[in-house]
Amino acid sequence: MQAIPGAWRRTATGAGLLGPDGSPAPTIFAEMTALAARTGAINLGQGFPDEDGPSQILEVARQAIADGVNQYPPGRGIGDLRAAIAEHQQRFYGIDLDPEREVLVTAGATEALAATLLALLDGPDDEVVVFEPFYDSYAACVALAGARLVPVPLAWPDFQPDLDDLRRAVTDRTRIILVNDPHNPTGAVFSDEVRTEIVRLAERHDAIIVTDEVYEHLVFDGVRHRPLAAEPGAAQRTVSISSGGKTFSATGWKIGWVSGPAALVDAVLAVKQFLTYVNGAPFQPAIAAGLRLPDEFFAEIAATLQRKRDLLGDGLRAAGLEVAVSRGSYFTVADAASLGATDAQEFCRALPERAGVVAIPLTAFVTPANRARYATLVRFAACKRVEVLTEASVRLSSLSR
Ligand code: PMP
Ligand code: GLN
Image 1 (cartoon, rainbow, N blue to C red):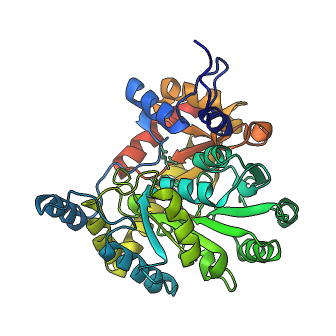
Image 2 (image 1 turned 90 degrees about the vertical axis):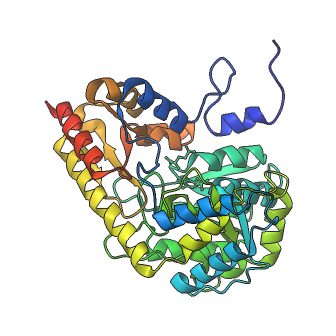
């Protein structure tokens, strides 16, 4: 059969997923979760919790289904969820939002990112500055939009960008600076200098800042998340994106949101309404209830995940890997070079057989030209039960023998 034409090809290429035979490969997350299922290995690859979130939230969703909340919600999301998102931004960050005009509910952060990038980019002259390694959907959506990705490297072990690299990357061609903080896959939380420079460069070059803050409540060591939109001068040019998946351990519910100036939110809505239109009617009131949980809930999820980060880090070090201490997110990056690895992808494909554990090579999050820089780095997810992380550590210890 002839090659099938269409934008899928540049999307798959952008994500590094067009195979040598011209067919699209599944994402690294799908591949590694399937590998875990096939081999019975412990899945520290794809980032999803193996326990449910708060039962009162689950109950709100059950009750909503029983109460007939099963038809299309409004295009911008149910009013109560938009109000809860605005309250949450005010309570945690002092950000004022009009829930009618400045908040939009989406099908997870994934759709929020896709709709935002498709809405705000317009062809090959538009550039998007991203920090590399980056979450896989960024390169895919920038390619789908026909725009150009400009990566700024994050280097082991603290994964902060070099400010001169950042200054060189942002120009008058930059439409968007896309910032994921806390950062997947590295666990970095960006320093004050980096944050200030992002805002300064965006102002100087009239770029829009798009943030991905899905790990906003999973920051460690007593640090509190600060959205870039709260920086002086940033609000009017920032589209902030988050989701309930990580905060409420409900990654399958796919309730996300966009907030920012009304004109930018309207532009995103113009695209979003033709992607999914709407989603998740009974989950929307449940996430609204979650966002209104007391401060103790949010403190507790960060403290619990921090203990898991420490447990995982100890296990990785005991297994002979070097570990970059994660400051936030589900993830910890380790260097397998100390175990003799030269190619993280090969290391990860062999890991289920060698140690009964699945992890993700960092090369899955970088542009092909830059793979060498991350060749031996591996991402492990800490969002699993303590017994599972303990068992994974026991298994990984076989690597150093
Ligand atoms: N951004 C980042 C950095 C992520 O790690 C994820 C996935 N978990 C997403 C976006 C997608 O979020 P969602 O599941 O809400 O679509
Ligand atoms: N965000 C999850 C991760 O980084 C994966 C989500 C997905 O499979 N697309 O592991």
